[in-house]
Image (cartoon, rainbow, N blue to C red; front, side, top):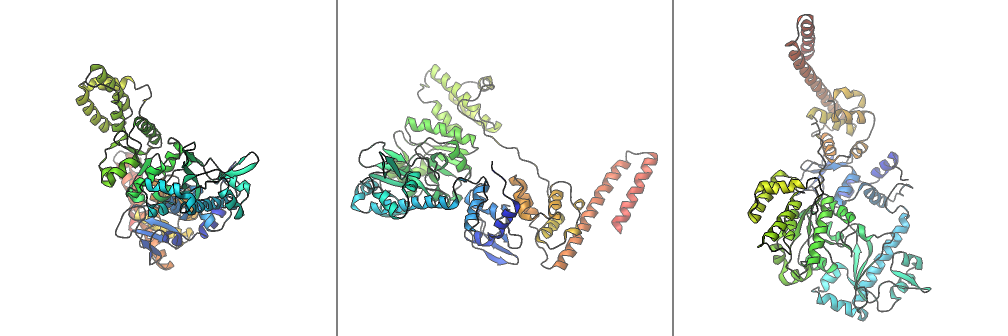
Length: 575
């Protein structure tokens, strides 16, 4: 059973992972005071509002309010879950992951996993070199015939597998890899007591993850063999259900705000050659929930770009349901019938692609609901209206539903009330063509006042002693909870990483980044005393207002007691 990473181990990882150094690999930084400043990598801006606090080892953007520790930065910038970001930093800091930590691929030691990655990398380079030799002539001709030039081929790392059955295996053995290594990552297979290459006389497409690891290969036959396309089987470092082709390029294209999902390797490359960004492909399978969740780490919107024929349209409808389940906004690109993305982009270029209809998910479902129906007949129109009502049952926004109903009234001639009754008639049945989007309720987070923020910031930086404060100095709620943790000695990093809700974590970052803070301890103490006095004065004012409202309802001795309390508060406020 997986165990929790210990706090001391995580603290050592943070200490050995310089936030300033890591951020500088993504954002140019300039020092000003205790902070380094640059333009935020998470939203577009011209004036730098992104800061790295070298004392607290925290980052924070005053524009979009993203912030956190070095682990949170890697999670956000590389689109990694927590454990994968920890692995990334541990590898960089030359720290061994704790045993039974629950880390990805924990059955493999880090050195063993890296050895398998390196074997795949060697194979990718071997295939690429072979492409330019006589043995790779058929594959090179194939790539040229698909509209790629030498520069494209080098950019995408394409290759050719040998025509014999042992070329790669022998080359890997010469590099010191064992037959066990080679078969374990499906670069070779054992047949009748001998080991031979898995890929024979094929055009090769390396599959690379977002961190640059070569995971495996897609391969298209050149000699008429079957199957036409062959992928690396699942290995200790590769699972086709959990990965996407082209993700290594897409991760650097965050600013476009969406991914373009295609079905084939050449669809990916042709669109990218034409300048379309964010293109990724499934790996010989229909879209899986795991792939949808992987895309959700990179974007909130996916454009489905499948073939324009009936099988492609059906696949797009299936993909819509899976993406809905992953809470991803969708559009579907509608290609002319009989054309796939590769054919279309080579015939019409980027301008043609940009002009293609891109339907929101519900619109595309309604479009496909008309397929095969004769809408000039009553039976056809009735069938369409019934199918459309099934689809609209999955629309949860009242405004969107109203818009679709108006359109459906115009298309079908049915009265709006009739259509609504049809929608409601199936309300107890699950919608066949649409899944309701799962939207987590947003938890309301109380604001942190400027005085509380200043105190929390100085406390987190060690500018003031914890003994100066009491948790009762802070408003009940988040501010008091965070103050209690810091007073008890919890580090800002542990505090922030313990906040699971993104909205609350952003508010905590805001509270821990009050500006300006005095650089010297004496100035910080004076500022803290002023903040504490102001907070206590605010509490007394609030209590005075409460007593004044109670006096209006009280009588006799109770009223006299309340007046006495009020006078005491006024005296304390004037002191």
